[in-house]
Length: 123
View (cartoon, rainbow, N blue to C red):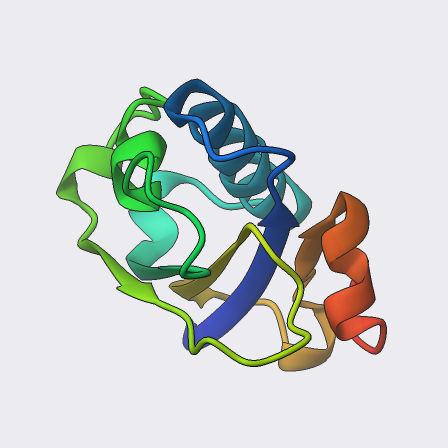
């Protein structure tokens, strides 16, 4: 079993807590499903949000998913750098996981318009 990292991002249409809950839930669910993971495989998740998102914490949105065992996974949030021309309203995640998958088979998940952020690894 190896420790790996999986990345993901989603662009929100608006800064609203219910919308963040929905979009972060979709992102985290996709990361888990596409990599065959359960909460037991998660070591920690680091969420970032662009400075224009104020409605809620992405980690709080993840907790609302009700995924069995997610309450025992350390989650943290931080703010992305404010860079001129950067895509607005983006939540990113970096999940540290335990898996037998080689690095080349990790499915990084970039949903919707956020796929443009990393065309090289978005699946």
